[in-house]
Picture 1: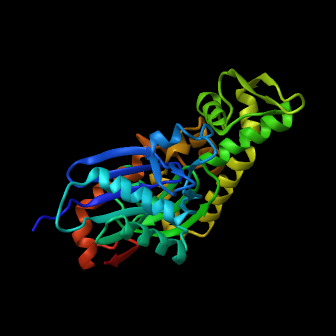
Picture 2 (picture 1 turned 90 degrees about the horizontal axis):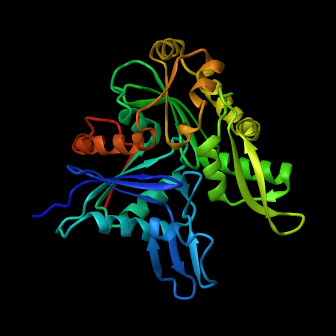
Picture 3 (picture 1 turned 180 degrees about the vertical axis):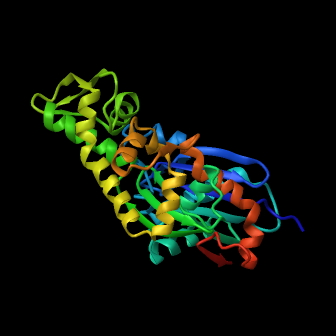
Length: 341
């Protein structure tokens, strides 16, 4: 009997990363789907669909089916997953098992939607793993030991803060403040201060080039072109590093407040472990300059950004594919839930 290889999927708000057992990460694409509204036909998925955002005729719509880390459009998500699975699998008589990452705060309804989408996409069994656990494994942390580790995973739609010990989440908090919220904050700031409207792509570019949440040694400036709200014409404005700190203040403060909340509800023994082990930040949002310095200054705990933070969850999912048999027979309790088709 020919078995398909096990597949791991980091199902993020902004990006979908797919790993195959024995091959590692095989594809990394934006979480975007282009469809024909008139016929319902799926046209493009991933990078090809992202290029269409804001540039499509009336009958074609580019959709982001994930919002705040969970499924917002089930049908589109299922079709997107099916396309990704089809790309990475070859013919086999038995469907693959699929391990999917989810936010730690996911509800039972949202959990069920992910399981059903995975099953409809071609899985014979679907396993879910909480993103902070996957991120910790991907960052090289031994989560099986009886000691506390604090992981802050700043993704596109959600920030997951979790205390992990003995392969499980002891305390966690998930907030809808992450990479997309930083982009929105820049859009709002420039609109309010300069009366200029910019797009999400421009906002993300500003965030990556000069964005910061902690004072930088140098004050860089970039010129941004947008539409003047007073005249309706193109207008060029200058944005400085110091202004991005002001723009990001509300979002970054909510992340810090959530970190404090998790630490305050964590057992003292684990807090002592965290003080010794330090805090690890993962996810694409961790690349905003100074986020580690901000967390360290507010908690007085050594804070580091993981190597290759954007791929930590995907690395963790890929490594966990080796343990699917142990998850299935119950000897390893890493997966959140299992659905057998």
